[in-house]
Length: 89
Length: 366
Image 1 (cartoon, chains in turn purple, red):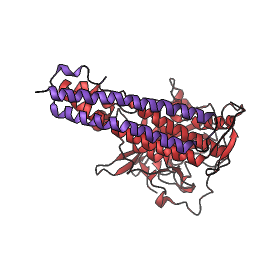
Image 2 (cartoon, rainbow over the protein chains, first blue to last red):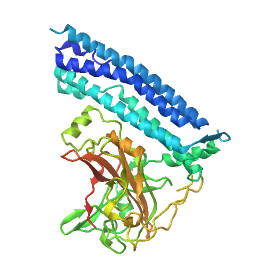
Image 3 (tube, chains in turn blue, green):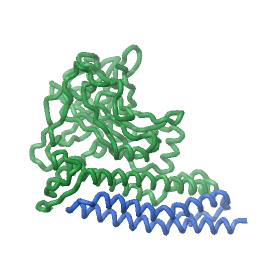
């Protein structure tokens, strides 16, 4: 998704290394963000009942799924960047 | 849904909203780091314009977390209002009441801006009079539709005092010159309704916008850039320059000032009520700002501002003149940084629907 067309030109090794590290770090962070979201949700829902709570739960579910899904995307970016680093002269 | 009973503890929802806003801030910082690395690769490999065109598809996550935070805070506020101001106890009420409060608080001025038709703005602002002054006047181009459904021309007043142009006073005492009535040239205004809050004024900026901001172009709007550590609270006091922190400081209310304005609860009937009416009759809040209790944009607002880029604090006053004219004075406050990196507040009047329909505010000292 990120760099499918980039490889047509030589890529700077340093920038690729930095990108790989940043992507790897974000890939680790995203599940932590999902946990953080669940903690916030637990704070909100201790005494919350009703249709607005249902809407909140729905959004939390979608966001959790999106965060975890994004992890795969970001991990792929990191992996691609690492591959390009190793493939570069 | 109207018969469904629901309950919540507002303070819990506020705490969750603040925590979610912190999450949005952290996620935004993490994505910004990824963007920076990605843009560097693109810049090196494909050139400036390729990097400029870069859009990270993950930014919608930040917006979604932001929106969730605002939603929880709004529901908390609705429960608090439904519970007659109770924040720390569980409030039980009908879902319809919460929906009503949510809709009432959902009105944001940025969503209701409209361009003027030919000649419409001038007619609305000046009426049938042929009014013109060499050293004072109004700037504006558009309208805002208020919560009552009426169209109000947006005005940015200005006066010249001692060769300096001012757009607002940093506090006005009763009977003293006031920029808002053009130092007496256009008197007779009374505030019908006033509202402060926070709003999203644009989506998260892409690289093109951030680049323009970085080189100081005005097309992207006022520059902003505080961190959460910089900004904990923004205080907007009608009629005063905004301040960082919880107190307007030197602008403490004067002993001779009229009583502070405290809107009825509710501020106005929830939407779908057939006869929406504003509380009427109080003096202009904007004009008599020195007399008013500060309206705090706190907690959630600070966290939202902290991750910058897309939010502002606003203060909008809907006013009516004794001759029947109406107008809106819509002020936005952005959080920025000075050359030394310290947080500063920048104020503008919004004068129309376009991004550049803004007039920077220079506050006249007290």
